[in-house]
Amino acid sequence: MRQGPTITTIAERAGVSIASVSRVLNRLPTSEATVRAVRVAAEELGYVPNSVARSLKSSRTNQVAFAMADIGNPTYVAMVRAMQPVLKDAGFRLILHSTDADIDDELDVLRRLGERYADGLIISPIRLTERHLEAFAEARAPVVVIGSVPDGTPVDNVRADSRTGLRLALDHLYALGRRRIGFVNGPLDTVPGAARARAYADALTELGLPHDPALIEIGDFYRADGAAATRRLLARTRPDALMCANDLIALGALDVLRAEGLRVPEDVAVVGTDDTDLAPVAWPTLTSVALGSAERGRRAAELMLDRLADGDAEPRVVTVEPRLVVRGSTKGTS
Image (cartoon, rainbow, N blue to C red; front, side, top):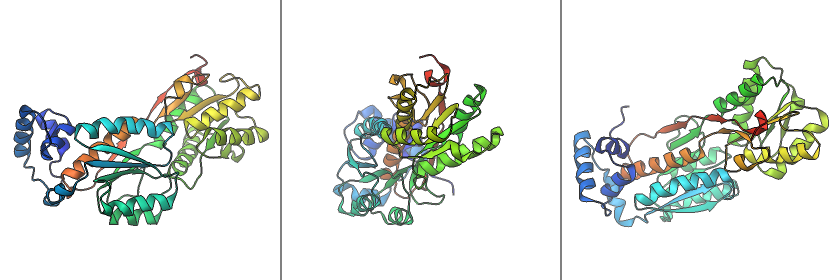
């Protein structure tokens, strides 16, 4: 089905920001020049405001909620920093909720949308269940999901491309002559853990490297768990590189490698994932796969504004492309 005009396409036609379009459509204060430009663009594109959205305007809270697994994780911090200015410029406050990755808590946040504590919810669950999918379909307010969901799920979705990201990392390590590339992952019952496990296995196959179970260890997405998992891996085998499922795991791996007297990157090269603010201040500085945390947060906020302006539009999926940021933990220079 061909998608009609959205506030994104209106913004492009008018030459203004998405937030400015949202302010005009929601009758919030803005300049007369912006109002004129937006109205002309909307008319040219044939934009028709959603009647349901108009009827709900009087009961709006002008708040958007963001539910994440761990408010202290630098990946989510980057998302929040990117979301807030987009929503604030459109007249919305951003409210935060840390679920501790508790599924029941996430489902409760979704169900309580009917109580109008916020006009919409951006959520990033690390475990995705059938109950989540049912709650998305039954949500009483717009929902945007950061993280992969099955095709056809009736929500707007912003996702990372872990497969390409890990392939970039393993290609880099392979080019450096590394052939025993270990993998320290998070739980396999999580969306990122499962995706990164598949990506690692696929990359080994494509590079012609053997699948050695001794080189794989499962922990959790925290520094201490990453350290414990690295100790278990080193106790049974010696890799010449470690691919880590996030930067916190990688920092734990660096702690253990130093304690074991192993040089990074001379003895063991290390790559993290997410390219958080911690990567450039690690010692050595950490090579990491940038999955666009800030970009995912910004795009999620924009999708939410589009959805609040037109509740009838077809759900959209946005994929943020990864890149590899090479630093001292693989190259040997800071």
